[in-house]
Length: 329
View 1 (cartoon, helix red, strand yellow):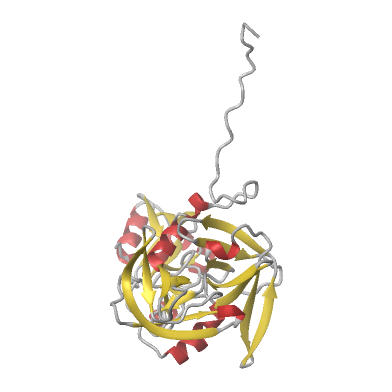
View 2: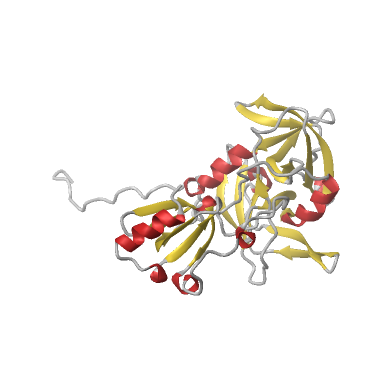
C-alpha cells in the first residue's frame, strides 16, 4: 500500500499541487493524494501525477475533494475515520455497493443484535404471496429470493423504522427489479418511493469462516408474522441439493422466511433462507452468502429486462438485413 508521504513527494516532483489535489482516505490509516478521474460503484481512478491508481471502493473510508482538502493541511484525526470496532453496521455507507466484513467482528447477544439490525429486515409482498428480504445499503437496494417475486412486477415492502423508541411500520410500493438469478434463487430489488429515507442495512459476512455447531439466527416473516426471530446452530455448510451447496440450520424456517437473512452472532449475514424440509422441524436451509456476493458483484450480467420479464438475461438484437435482394427473388 502506498503511504501518504510517498505519494506527496511524488506529486510535488511531478508538478501537481497538493492544495489542488483530492484526498482519498483508506481503511488502513493511509491516504492517497491526487486527482480523482472517475468514480464507479466498485472502484475509483486517481491520477497521482506519475501514474493512475485504481482503488477498490471497499478500501476507501471517504474522499475529500480539493475544496475540502484545502481547508486542512493534514488528515483528520484517527478518531474521525476509524469505524467503531463493535458496530454491527458499517461506519462508511458509501464505501461500496454492499458492505463486506474484512476482519472478525465482536460477538453480541441475539437480543442486542435484533435491536441494532432489525430495521434492515423487511417483508416483501406481491399479489400472490409474501416473503422476506434485507437491505444491503442505505439507498434502498435489497436482497430476497427469486421465487418470492417470480412472475411478479407489482412488489411492495414493509419496513419497521425505529422512531422515538417505537416501531413505525411503513409500506413502500414503488419497488423495482434490478437483477435476477433464477438458478441461485436470488433477486436484487430497489425501493424507488420518492419519500423513502436512508435505510438501515446489514453487512455481508462469510459462511466459509463459520464452523459447524456455531450459533446462528434468522429474522423474517414466517406465515406473515413479521419480525419473527428464530435461533439455532449451523448444522452443516455443505448440504448438497440439486447440484448446489446449502447451509443447513436448526433455526426454524417456514414459508414467509424465504429471502430473509441468516445471521452469525456478529450481526453479519451469512446466508439467505430459502427452504425447509416439509416433513420435519429443525431442517432449514440457506443460500451461502458467498453466492450472494457473486450475484451482486456480477449483477450487470443478471440485469432484469423489462421487455422480457420472465428471463433475467439480456439478449442482443439480431443483425438486420442488409437490404440486398437475391437474384432469384
